[in-house]
Image 1 (spheres, rainbow, N blue to C red):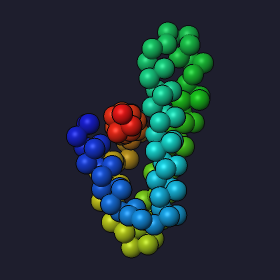
Image 2: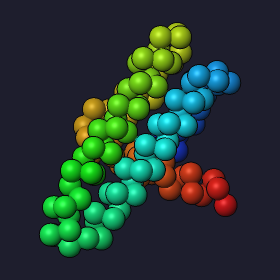
Image 3: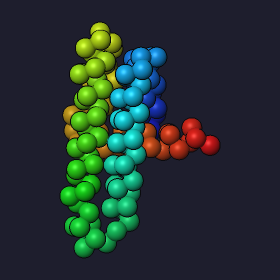
Length: 113
């Protein structure tokens, strides 16, 4: 998963290029990934009762991340004639999409050292 996420993030960055509007959308997508991944990690550490209390916020963050992926890909990169093979790589299955968010958060952390 981590290798796929790294290659996919590189593809996304290439498809965004130096377009200022797409750069903003990419930043928003990565911020949504970090928010979701953080909640997912906290959820994993929580007990059963605490998890139930976190479920709604985690689902909302997950939906927001998925929306941000779709906004960047089909609504903006593709609309400008850009390549969105990376969107097919991410897929449509919620857990897999969430895995990308978690891997990208880790990559961003490593890039930030």
